[in-house]
Length: 76
Ligand SMILES: [Zn+2]
Ligand SMILES: [Zn+2]
Image (tube, rainbow, N blue to C red; front, side):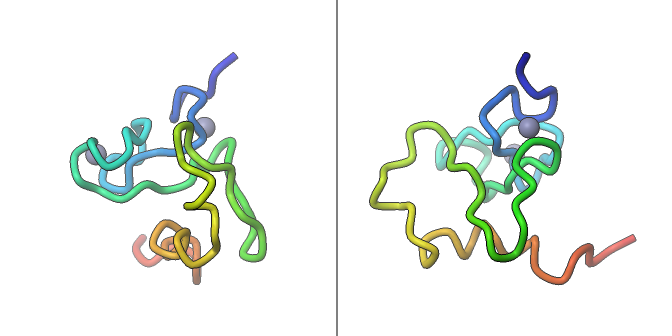
C-alpha cells in the first residue's frame, strides 16, 4: 500500500508537501523527505527518491534536501 502523501516515492515537494516530489522536473521546488514514511532522524539519511543516481547519495548532495529537518518547524 503506497503512502498517501508521496505515493510510495518517499519524497514530497517542498512547495507542495501534500504531493509527491517529481524530481528536478517538478514545479521547481526542492524535494523533502516524506514526513510520514521517510522521517529520518538528524543523523540518518532519508530514503532516496527513485531514479536518484548513486553518485547523489552523499551527505553533501543531500544537504539541500535536509535543510528543513534542521531545527524543527519554523512557522506555526
Ligand atoms: Zn511542487
Ligand atoms: Zn510517504
